Structure formats: structure tokens, C-alpha cells
Length: 258
Picture 1: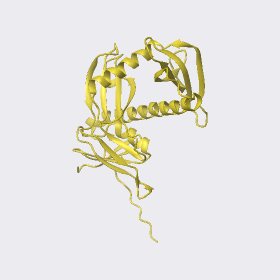
Picture 2: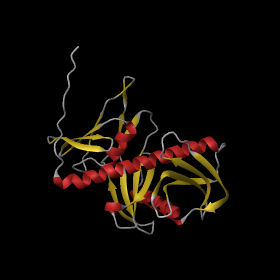
Picture 3: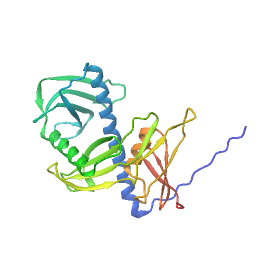
Picture 4: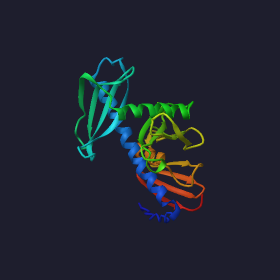
């Protein structure tokens, strides 16, 4: 049997797109980490609190920090109560160190949710109101606005989801920038033109890669990086600029022929 090895030659990233590609990669990774922390925290919560606590309204996921604001190798998923003001009733701590199990904490007596968390809740609700109504289930992820907004503003990624197994959602996601007050939508950007779902299995076997088309930008977005990391396979993204290969956090131009 002969094995055919093909060396792929990637094209240089167009200079005017380099910053946007780095931004998409960094943001896609950050969204994935937050999404995974929230999912792991929710799973742990369902394991420790049975039957489910009907007094809970939701949760806030934050990276824990040290005395000087330096990020620690752990996440905290705080589950808060209904009503105003919200109180933290349970907390799940998740280490970024591989192999460490989640740590469950019952907050007794419940503590007021810090103002940072309250602002994130407001921002999430304001973003959903500004971008909705939605055709698909939506999972919000909140981050500092960074290059998309002004200091103190909040980036809310409204990620479309599905209940189908072995399926990755390519759209329709939204990027919303919320003002410092946590209630005012500064901008709403649809990251795709229509809902799109791709199966990660074919004939009972996991696919080696996926193919999609991006019509609203010339380059792949943070949601393509998130989808590649979530599905665990590379994604070929066709744009008007050509064909790109998104392999987890790496985004490279494969062909200038769209």
C-alpha cells in the first residue's frame, strides 16, 4: 500500500487582516474557555444539588483573580437566587489544572452577588432584548468589550445552540456591545446571515473536517474558532477573500480563490 503525503502550503495573511485574525483567534479561545467552565459548573451543580433548587435564577461565570488582579488558574461559577437583589447560594470552583475535580460550596448564609456580577446579568438581558427574537436556543457569554468597544463596556456573545447530538452550530450568532451601565446596547452585529448546523458524524464515524461559508466578513470569526475547538475538528471557511482553514485557535489562508 502506498501512502500519499501532501504538504499544504498556506498563503500569507493579508496585512490588513492580521489584527482581525489575531482578535478572532484570541476571542474564540476565551469564549470556548468560558463556555466550558459554565458547562462544567452546571454539571457539577446538578450532581451536588438534588433535587434542583427552584429558588435559583441563573449563574455567573468569572475567572478568579489574586490580590493584584492577576488571573488565577481557576474559575468560579456562582449560582444566584431569584428576586432583587440576587444572592449567591452555591458556588462551583473549577481548576484549570487537568485532573482536578470541581469544588462545591454551599454559601450559608447566602451572600449578595457582587456588583460586577449584577452588571453582567443586566448586560446579558439587555443584549438578548436588543438582538432578539431568536430562532434557536441562545447561550450568552460575557467578556470585556476590548477592541470592539470602549473601556468598561461589555461584550456579549449570543451563541446559538442546539439539542441535537454530534452537531456544531455555525450560526446564527450575535455580537452585542453593552455600555458601562450594563443596560444600553451600543451595537448589535449578526455574525452570520442565517441559522446553520453541521453534523460532526457521518455513517457512524466522526468526520475529519467541516466546511462552511462566511458571507458577512472576508475572514473567519471568533465563532469559527469556538466551533472548531468545540467540535474538535478543523473547519474550512469560504469567504470572498478565499478559503481559510480554522484549526482550533489557528486561522490560516489556504487559497485566494473563493
